[in-house]
Image (cartoon, rainbow, N blue to C red; front, side, top):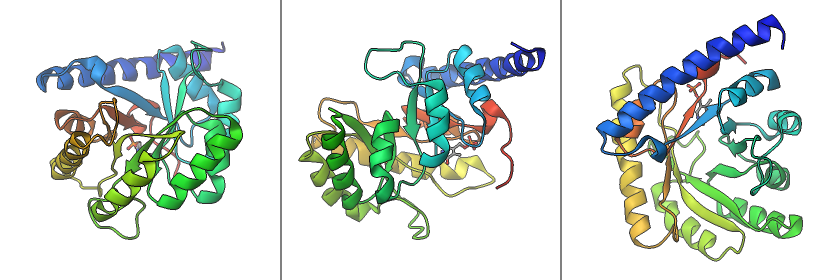
Amino acid sequence: MTETVRQTGDALGARLDEIRGRIAECARRAGRVPEDVTLIAVSKTHAAEAVQSALAAGVADFGENRVQEAEGKIETIGRAVGTGGASAPRWHLIGHLQSNKARRAVKLFDVIHTIDSAELIERLERACAEDGRAELPVLLQVDLAGETSKAGATVDALPELIERAAVCKHVRLAGLMTLPPFYEEAEQVRPFFRRLRELRDEWQGRGAFGEGRGELSMGMSHDFELAIAEGATMVRVGTAIFGARPAR
Ligand SMILES: *Cc1c(COP(=O)(O)O)cnc(C)c1O
């Protein structure tokens, strides 16, 4: 390791320790255990070296928002598919997925958080069958703000999507995800997190997530503590781990 890589790794390790401490503290305050919450390190725009440093610091889950960008990184770093490769991480797709990239996404990602159409479910199901992939856990992305410009399914669309997923052999509905509007005041996102948890509880009661607990993927660098207080089981943290991203 070069001196620069090691120093970068040390700083990253310190930030990770701090974030893990906050996650644990919030979980306990909410009457939960720290292990309830999976930290997904969002590595989009950052090079494979940054992923390697985080991996060395014990991160097991990474989030990427573009298939194209993730491809090279996942090839370099590897993937903990099934029980093999204990030292390799799981990869989560957290950005919008175009139907025509479903096949590539099935080859690359362990979990897809951004399902928002029946067509996408069909495409992924077919790609799994063709690729010999037994199971693909997915989350439905719910647009709770009614921002039609944004990705995500409306609450009204959920019954149809959940029904579609229920008849799939390979696509397995594992939970819900949301990306609330940005507020300067983090506290303002609380109602969105709460609403997603209520929806999860409601659909869990109807068996939408099978034997699973119904994952709640919500919370980012500036609001993950609130999200955990409201029940998040997966937080997607980028900037607080890797530093600011270059402007696109
Ligand atoms: C980029 C991104 C994140 C991480 O955001 P930070 O503010 O850097 O923590 C989380 N979720 C999604 C969907 C993202 O695109």
